[in-house]
Image (cartoon, rainbow, N blue to C red; front, side, top):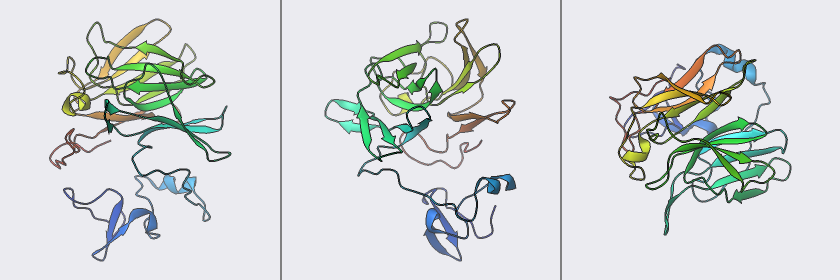
Length: 254
């Protein structure tokens, strides 16, 4: 941890850092612009590295996913949960890296989108579900974004809690889809009581097999693989409760 970095778990934003008692926004702090767990992180940047704002709005429209499509040169993302007259909703948007234009997608069949990844020439989203719709993995077509296809919506007949993030592991015998399922939906009041413990799953779409591969988490959230595919990284974000309160006694781990 860099010298001078500190944060109060109950009050400070994760985007601030303290140097000599002065709190400075993290991205304006040139001495400690990033917090890295390994020195190899520095090899990703050169001395001229910059941060560019691609798009902005006056609400949390870019919250999750952040999936780049090489085919269309766009980044797709989902908003935070928005309180609208018709109830809680999530926007799915895409920003063109060529023009900077932002378009909101009307993706039928996705209730509350969250994490996502590239899959089969499209985007695979975690749909958190709602009080009347199941939480599920949904494939969204790049050419016809309103066209979606449910991939998986249950584990041996039990409804998922509120799927959060997903990644595809490429394998010579066929792709495997790994995803996380925390209880945030129930805690935030848009999903029924949980039928399953918080867990991480692997789905084999070729043979239709789905397995719970890891439990013992409180709120499994982000998921990613090392470049060689041998290590799976999963975050547990129970530190941030579904009601928005912070509890430093709970896991905040990778």
